[in-house]
Image 1 (spheres, rainbow, N blue to C red):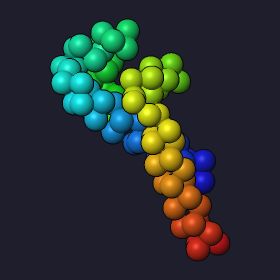
Image 2 (tube, rainbow, N blue to C red):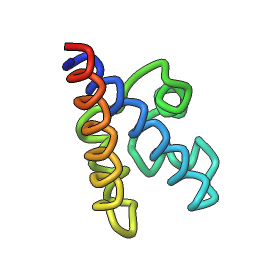
Image 3 (tube, rainbow, N blue to C red):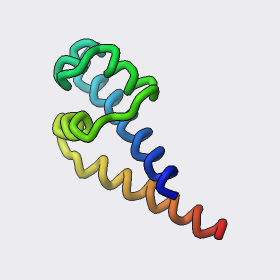
Image 4 (cartoon, helix red, strand yellow):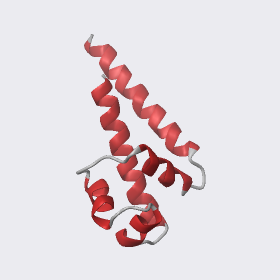
Length: 89
């Protein structure tokens, strides 16, 4: 179950990073600069090659108008995962 929850979190953070960059009309290079990381490291997050670190996640969440929306969406996804898991037990 932990693996599934980590996969959901990684996917949601990836999508949040992309959506945030697009909402702010930033190139990957500028988004990487704002996150204080290399452009290639940021690109790896967007492509799913690597996961966001805790610090990068916090910095992306800080760019949101209302970070609670992300947590609510994550809570819903986690609940769906638990529900699916319970059906298979």
